[in-house]
Image 1 (tube, rainbow, N blue to C red):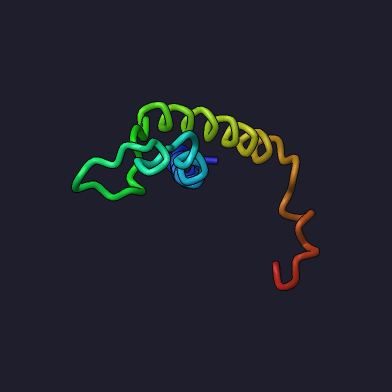
Image 2 (cartoon, rainbow, N blue to C red):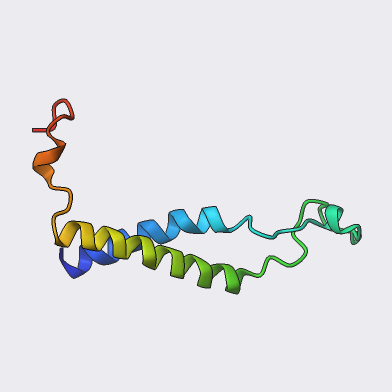
Length: 88
């Protein structure tokens, strides 16, 4: 697997994991009980994006490592996927 493909796959994994991590620990102004005038009640109080980006990067790195090992050592080969109709 080349460098460009590795970067592309990591970016896709990272992006999907980001959407899974974003809702973690978010509290809205309404849940907090302190709605500021001029803000939407559903706006997050403290989104902590830096911590979520770090968590996303770590989780994506673990998933990518598993993918990389699977592809490098051919733990799942394309020939084993011939049960899929019209694959060839």
